[in-house]
Length: 620
Image (cartoon, rainbow, N blue to C red):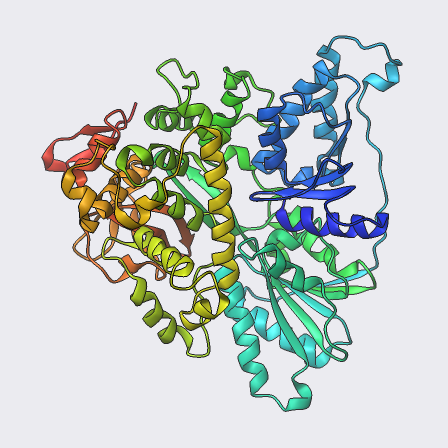
């Protein structure tokens, strides 16, 4: 289910097979395909295999498919298992191996045996028609688990203190610390580095390292390198280090007891990342990372009674997330009646209804919930979530295709665009202001990219001078090129002169002023973004916070957003992040209220002015 697992395991297997990565053994992750016609063993994320099924519905080039970490119940894994169950009816010779923790093996067994009972009988022994559980004992060492007597007031500070306690009082061995997200991890890495400076030189033998999904593949690989002789490595990671990957040398695990999980509120239509307690299954997986190569210790930053109160497993992602991207893919796979699709755990009806409503408003589905062609099909085939897919596919009609292509790439990169150099946050903010667009974050990202490829000539020196992450910017160039190829496959030509000299005369959708005026181009870009992100609209309140269009959720511009310190009446935003008591919005752009009704008359209705908003999402 994860990028880091697909890449690291592929590289390891290629080494053991004795081949160059990308030849007999390869991998495919989003925006990065390292495989070839010679590839016989391919590691890929579950989402990518679903995408392959769009082109080859029976996955006919594979004879064996192994689904790893199925017990994590990611939404892509659940949908993939449902697809495989349907494929096996047509391809009884296909072999499926599901790798799962013991806890959920029976559930998978029942799911596939029910399916096979209903399938046409294949000429095979009766025993071969039934799925079976094969148990393999993992080779692990004893793990000593320690708990706090009282809950930690600040688990981040407690985690850092625990790292230094281990460093000064425990025997040799590297340390793995589980935190919830990028901001916490970056803060912890910096805090350890700062604290080391206050120690004598001979004691500065601790190497802090980050590991999270937002890092590039190359950056993630650093955690697998051996530290210098006499130095102890401490890896601060999200839950991506819970399974699939083994970091050699880990003897100590520090578990904060929390995880960020995506949760969709059908009432407010807000899809956000929420920090919540982990499950017992996750706690067990985390502790298990300490006993892979020798006896280890796990320090749980919560009392034992808190552990006893944890749920056995987390709610499957399919029952708590925005289903729109996945329903779109199922429709593109020819599965019209998604309600009858074989889900291991059926999603709630209200989540299904909200997804269908959004896809209809975006124009991906017609009034009969059938996939529209070409728009809906193209949205499904693009490696973008539906709102950005709609934005990109409608950009030509606004005369800003090249610019929206850049914005789509910049919002798809894995890492942060900015980094704090030697000058710290103040210097970074000064650099950011040089590229700032009055209209907000999306146009600022456009300015950054255009400066990088023109003035900066795609060089690392330019990035260093302007506090830009060179690897992230290089990745954006690559993603943009891939998205451009996808558009060309659809017969959509990207005229790059539009980015410099304005749209051409034959594009009648824009006024002559917009063709010549940079402000007109900026308005076209914002109108186009509104056409995709109308469901992510909010209105600024007198106190500087925002209310979502439903009017009942208080939102704060994220500190990384230009709108953190600026005024706007209405905005659209790219994503929501919940941390503690606040709900933040990121990648925020100013819009006009009238554009919302223009963009999505099916989604909005005009409400009585007395409600203070003027408009509401249509509650059908």
